[in-house]
Image 1 (cartoon, rainbow, N blue to C red):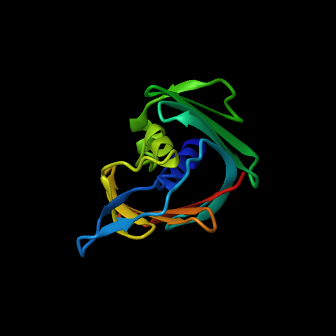
Image 2: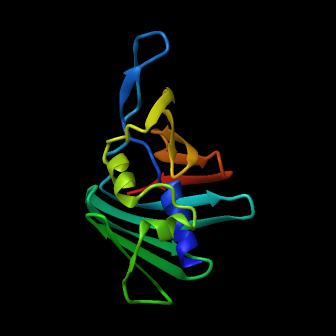
Length: 176
């Protein structure tokens, strides 16, 4: 369950950043800016084909290369923490309090389609080149073999990530 929570979180957080591109009529299509969000607390709501759940999230990443996140699942009392530093990730949870190394491939087996350093870049305002704007506030791209749609609602500070390939949706509500 621990890795599934982390995996779904990271899938869900495959969020947006600001960018501008050439629209279908040749003009500049302005995209709403996302972030920068180097640190925040919020909620993550996840809808999968077989279940729905939510966790509290605390995020800290001043730069994409290093950061940490904490997920709290109130219903079960499970707490999961993930840290990364230049591609090296470590994970622990309330049942296994010692940090241990974890590989991205291990997390991807549980549904993660974006590395935490990629997500950090997005939250800091740098949308990966693999995502292209489809309309204002919406991007699509392939990550980890899945077609991902990202939708940003700046007024609600709500980022929705939909894994179209696997039928999963995660919504990040960014608080303070």
